[in-house]
Image (cartoon, rainbow, N blue to C red; front, side, top):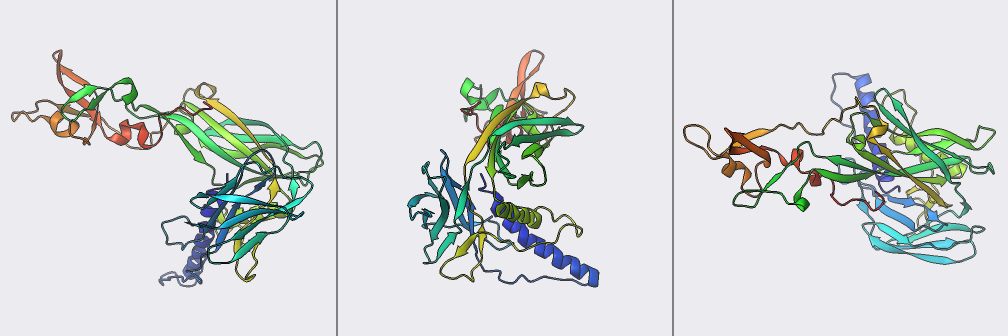
Length: 397
């Protein structure tokens, strides 16, 4: 999946330009204020993401428009476009609109001996097309593993092509993990009082997921054999919630041509490797998509024809060092709420825990002298895991 990759990366290009301008200003006049102006701030370039899947999986193409750096949105979805996969044999396959700038079709049953491209017609009447590309079969993923380091784990992938014909690889992944809230709530407000939770009302354990946004590439072009060994995918800190209970990664592998590999390399340099003035200079992105009706209009993206290989693995907590402790993302604490506090006998339970929505959520009862005196409670961020995930167990879990 590359739904979020290019949108995040394109904004990074503009941010990089701002950083460079600011650095130049600071170098020439340290105490002089400088407000860089970006040319073409209102231009909304078409961004095309996806691949033509020639295997048994669906073909998904995402269309969007670039936005200003100051914009709060990552991108603007391109709606109501007409999208087709076209073959070098004059065949054509419609890609239906799915909503939100996504266009897709089930397995197209394409002929791997032909060349294919994407053709797009937008609502403003402009037409775009990618270059015809040969089908590049992707070899299977051999294995996914991880190495335990002092401060976390490094997840890696192994793969190879016995035909020595792939050489260029890209990966994307979806992560899923189980996590729990900082405190377990055994009680809930019904609007008039505090009652025990039923089994389906517990909000302690949840599941959540995320998709990769970084560009992960590797090449065996300089090696005698087409082998990728322990290519790093993602580093997970030892304090991360991802590995506190159970973690899963679904990895997708794509074979690429050398031209496509160069495109993704440049995109990575222009967007991810901009931490200091010593990093690589940004270079122009040369994709394979063009505006047919007006060749002067830039288009961002590279669409290739390939199969996709995927593999899922799990990492359990008992596979990791016992001393590792998870850092909860919020600063949590428990407060005590009494039925009667002080000389004025203020009912803190009624004032804080009973109203819906409550100021805080009750966790467990407080007893004084063997009698119920109130409840402990904490904020919803620290008690309700459904604010960041779902209780629905994933089908593959």
